[in-house]
Image: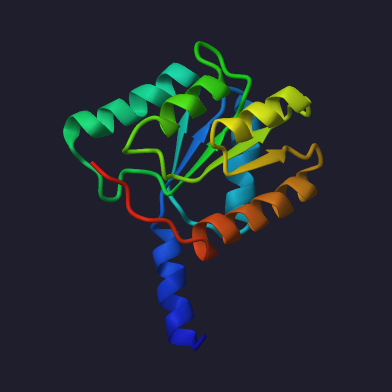
Length: 158
């Protein structure tokens, strides 16, 4: 790939929006710091529970604003207040607007039942949050490069 093509692709990747669905403020801060440390300049929206996550997409649909507001990647925790992450995942996969958006379960749950349910309901990936900051930064780097730079997804339907 020539430098010009790489630069154009990189600019396109930077414009992709990320939605982080996470209730733990320390994990939110850690994730945002890891994105920054890896020089990802993507806009990252944060919602703090499952109900707020579903309301986020209902707001987009009600305003008929799809371009540049729909996230290109969703990072979803499992253990959320109000509506848990598995229920959010099921709901997003049953909606034409969100069914093709890559959803990465970014969680501290190593329970086999959570892993299986996540894949059963359409998660694209399941990543355990590393406890060590440097390891977390590396995970976010790999995650960002793959899902925001290399991965190709079709555009979402209205």
